[in-house]
Amino acid sequence: PSIAALDAELIECRACPRLVAWREQVAREKRAAFADQEYWGRPVPGFGDEHARMMILGLAPAAHGANRTGRMFTGDQSGDVLFKALYDVGLASRPTAVSADDGMELYGVRMTAPVRCAPPQNKPTPAERDRCATWLEAELALLAPTLRSVLVLGAFGWRSALTGFASMGWTVDRPRPKFGHGARTTIRRPRADDGTGASSTAAEELTVFGSYHVSQHNTFTGRLTPEMLRAVIRDAAGAAGL
Ligand code: SF4
Picture 1 (cartoon, rainbow, N blue to C red):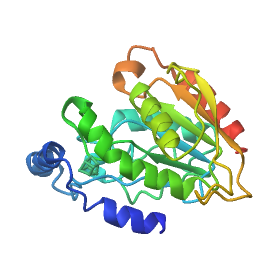
Picture 2 (picture 1 turned 180 degrees about the vertical axis):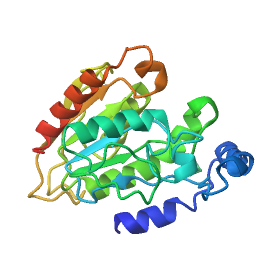
Picture 3 (picture 1 turned 90 degrees about the vertical axis):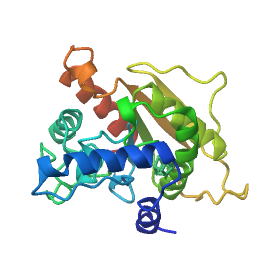
Picture 4 (picture 1 turned 135 degrees about the horizontal axis):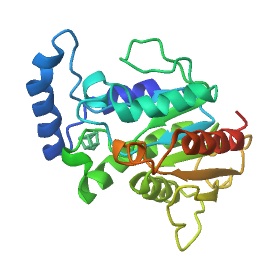
């Protein structure tokens, strides 16, 4: 299996009736407003380095951002804040992300989300979250050989990341570490000889970092400032050797 094969399968997923209806309704209604573009309106695959050392995990595509452009965090103000910070610390090739074909490159980083279809009010149900966890775990498994750190934006992604790794056999502290801005926890890889296929050359551990989400609710109010975001990105990049 490859990331490309996973993504090709993912974009055909129709497992959540409520989200399929919503993502397609938004695409239909808004297509006229963005007549010069193809409105994506489908599950959004991860974006970035296929051999990433660092992952950035959000929540779900925004209705008029990633659901429109088909690329994670691309096309809305939340994404603008994130890409600018990544560019500032040298992990992205451009300061702004406009569309899936804008030439943006990420260096050693892949961004993805625990829910791949835009949900109403940015709120997936627990059942939708659990259904989509299959895709997240498949992507984590493909990236696991090179992955050294995960930067999680928000409590929803934090829980999904720790649950996902635990169900893949990684050792995650109990009780589960709490989310917060600046939270971090180390999780340990399954041993190479335990049948899970872990590479013996991969690092034994990876560090999960928590950050407030880059939503406008946090960035407009100053709860998450550009300095705070750059600092936590630098921490996660440092742990990944980037
Ligand atoms: Fe499929 Fe995930 Fe979209 Fe549900 S949210 S339809 S599981 S891709």
